[in-house]
Amino acid sequence: MVKSITTQEFNSMDKTGISVLDFNATWCGPCKMLAPVLEELSEEMAADAKFYSVDTDENPDLAKEYGIMNIPAVVVLKDGQKVDMNVGFVPKEALKDFVSKNL
Amino acid sequence: MERFDIAIIGTGPAGLEAALTAKVRNKSVLLLGSKESSDKVSKAHTIQNYLGLPDVKGDEMAKAFLNHVTSMGIEITEDKVNAVYSMGQYFAIQGHNADYEASSVIVAAGMSAMKPFPGEMENLGRGVSYCATCDAALYKGRTAIILAYSAEDEPEAEFLAERAEKVYYIPQYEYAGSLGGNIEVLTDVKPKSIERTEDKSVLITEGDSVSADGIFILRQQIAPSQLVPGLIMDGNHVQVDRSMATNIKGLFACGDITGTPYQYIKAAGEGNVAALSAVAYLQANKNN
Figure 1: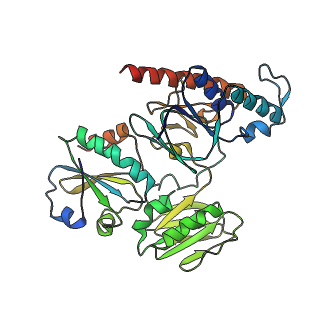
Figure 2: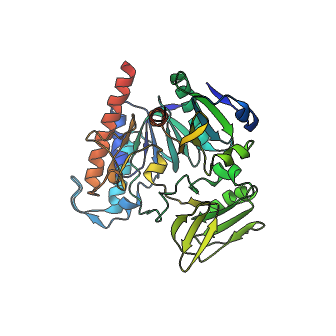
Figure 3: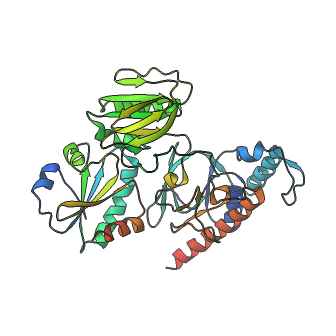
């Protein structure tokens, strides 16, 4: 499952382990296409990582904090530290490889 | 939404032949492109090595091609494709006029002369982007440069300007618009390259430069790797194997987009192979 979170929720949540943050916006076409792909991936990788969705329009501070210039952007966090980022739509297999190599 | 068996992008010899073959194999076909075939065909002077059509003029060849597909009951949907998304079990195709779905896709979009600026690909996603509406939210209180190639890009500039502090609009076409407010239109600017400093994107122009938080390049032509996100390229061409398969399952490419020689009969031949491979892919998926 991909959980939608706000900046506040993000700041107070437990970030132990691997978290995958999907930065998006409602009017962004490629973001909309990426959402179901991430949803599927989150089921497949449920044991490995937690998946979150961040609406950049409503949470600009979080986007700024992670240096997001273009969306969709998928950020991988290890114990709360940013370890990698992928910008733009990617097919599921490529996204899986991207998350897996950062486990 | 109707899900076609095979969507074919491009109406040059590769796309048209792929459509014929797919139709012969009884697949539902969505053929996207132009009802005039391709300029590269219709504007050619004479072609001397196309089997069965000796010394044919380009426009006659286009007519012969189009007559053939029409006689087979294949329709051409006039649309320009902006993006093809691999969704796993199917493909979502975003057109200029409409959105489509297909179980497999054949890209026969030809080669464009488009060359990225030095520094463009290196900074993609790090302050260089092709979708201003996508990223508008991130530009609250920031500045942006839009490099525009058509008057159709003007609404995109206005949308971005609603959020951004300032937008530099640099038209690469005959500008006759009325953009104003916090949009500064810079005409007669020739871009040369793009550089990224610590936190700014800099457009180097002939004898000058413009700097902002981000640069948007809104070209009319789209590079294949932008058209199909995730597609692996071999230089300027799409990487394919002998079955015309790309690295994305269910997506095939044929014609000039796969590489030289840029010959009509080679394109048509590859279109035939791509369609048969797509048919085999659909069959294999059905059996699973």
